[in-house]
Each structure stands twice: as C-alpha cells, then as structure tokens.
Image (cartoon, rainbow, N blue to C red; front, side, top):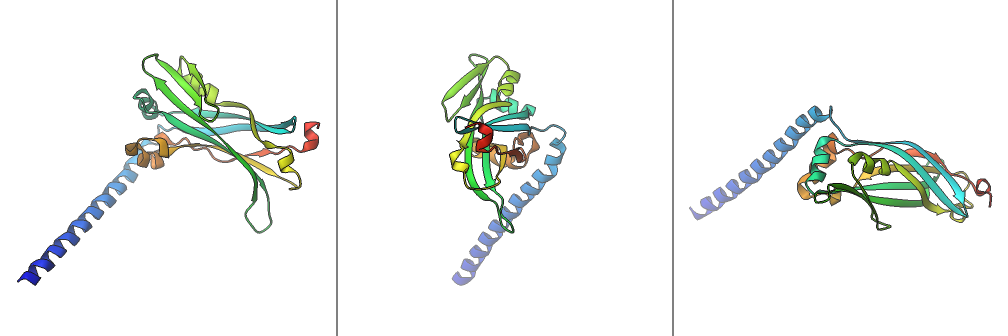
Length: 210
C-alpha cells in the first residue's frame, strides 16, 4: 500500500509539471498570436546616413537616423521607466571563405527618460556622463538622431589591414528594462528599437590629410 501511494504521489507531481509546461507553452503561443495585431503601431530605429573622416589621427563618425516610438514605450517612460540605447560601431577586414576579422569596435550608450517633476525629457550619454534636457520628446529624439564627431578609433590602429568595411547599428538594451517588460520587448514590435546594420566607408590616412 505504501509503495502504491508513493507511486501515486510521483505521478501527481509529473502531471503537475506537465500542466505547468503546457500552460507556459500556451501563454507563449497566445502571445505570438496577439503580437501581429500590434504591428500597425510599432517603434523603429532606421539609420539613414553614416559618414567618417580622419582628423588629427582620429576616425570620427557622424550618423543620422530616424527614431519612431510607440505610445506604449512613451507611456512607460512617463511612468518612470527609462529607455537605454546602444550605438555599436565595428570596423572589419573582409576575408575570403571566412567571417570578417574585427579590427576595431566601439559603443555609445544613451538613456532617454522623462522627469515628472520638471516635465522635461532627459538624454544622458552614460559613458561621458553628459546630460541634456528638452521640453519636448521630439526635441530629445532629434538629439539622438544626430550623432556627431564620435571617435570610433585611431587612424594608426587601422594601418596594415588593407581594405576595411565599417558597420553601425542601434539596439535597445533589453536587460536594463524591468523584468516584466524584458520578454515582451524581445518580440513586441512596439518595443522594436533595433536597427539593421548600416555600412559606412572607412577613410584612409591619406584622406585625413596627415
């Protein structure tokens, strides 16, 4: 009898685990079915132009992009949830029959948030610890859409690598969102602030006039 009860308990536990797994899977499938309906209203980041030049031995990169924020993302910021963005730049040396060799890389990190007391929008360069405030969200977004004189590497670091290719993209730092928002941010287009890679021409030392 004791052996029968033990087996029964184990069976119940297995059934409970199975039900939990089915529930989680059902929730995930339901989420995938609901998300396409949100595509009519979505956030986006699109890089439109990237230009680099060498000045005093440093490669500076200028970027123009377009940012569109969905109402859900804006409402989240109005409720004290900041949005963290990373601009990623890589310079690569193409290789036949293999992945490109990364020669240099750099990142710029920004935080966009709303201050309820002052009714202002704040853009912070988290690496430089520089913050700028704006009276409107459009003003804050415009500042993020124009990145100027970003020192991505030195000209000396690029010497001896032959032809090089530069790429840049913007991504939303999902890991800095509150836990309940991290999973939706991976799939929901209303949180899609990851741009495609944009190629830019890497200047040579002779173009810098050094």
